[in-house]
Image (tube, rainbow, N blue to C red; front, side, top):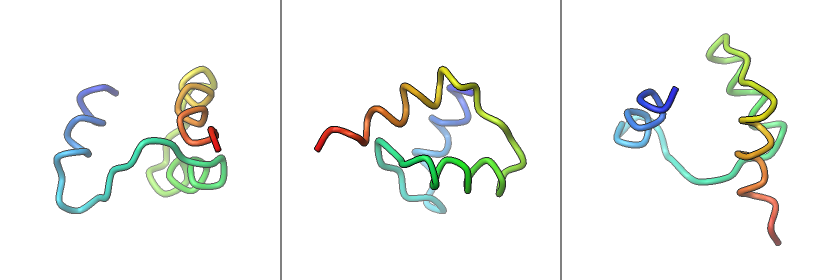
Length: 51
């Protein structure tokens, strides 16, 4: 998973930013046909919730 994220960050096809809301995460899961672990989602989502 880490290697995939590293490659994704370096790809010109995707815009990378830290943090995402739950709706965005579900969209990515559905689009890619994957299901991310809950622990990963909690850490990832927490990056974008500090307002």
